[in-house]
Length: 329
Image (tube, rainbow, N blue to C red; front, top):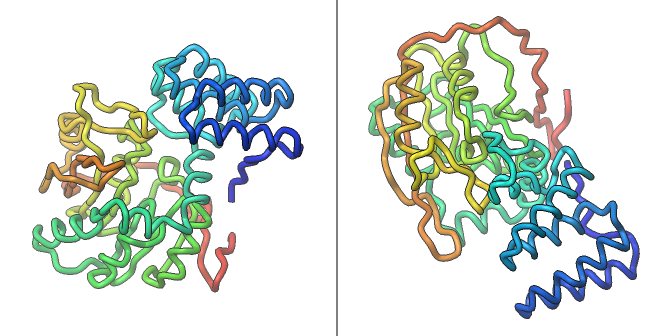
């Protein structure tokens, strides 16, 4: 699990942080900024302090101050556990990378795991797994031999697809999410891995690959599209969701620190790779602060084999659930 130090380890500094948070809650952002400036002077190597200062400056409309603070946070933590580099992209101060920092995504979901289901389903009206299940059912294939759930999280998609899967595997970057998925008890195998860096498979293994609310953490979809194409048998299906971009660019990083993709980009990247687009539905994925989040629910079929270099599966980092804990192998 990725650890994020949210306190300075000095009672005097932590007390100042409390004052900054009080000012923020009361809407006095400038007062909170002044307190945080003092905090960063007192503990200049505290990543969270700089990140917090950047967020406050951004909220106040001080782009220059926000950029300076976020750049300092990334300098102190090149792995970018807090996602300051992503916010630099949002502010236009850094060229789009096309991918979230691995440490940021892992830390985000490690911290979110305990309240993930209640928040996403109960409060935000998230129904992507059920909608993808319905779309796959409409394609007409009733059952699948080998199914892979990319970014399985706590297992919301696994619960939907378990009844039509002979063997169901899940992979996720977060240990905490994997433990929740194990408790749900719907997967045959759970593995830890970064979906943007999975080893190629030869020969293909799967009949169906799922990615519900996962590709929003990738801008450039070419690598994952190639991997899924190589992992699927001929005629295999890839069912996934992306958030819809209002702009004409292939993809854009949003203030939410999620990527949105243009419909034309989705059509182009799968068409060029030899897929058949069976479904590309424009739909509401969930709510966010009372607003509908629109996206695309997609089912595509692999019609042409993809060449890739053979690789030993032993090179992958696998985490199998053999009890209440997730153990490394």
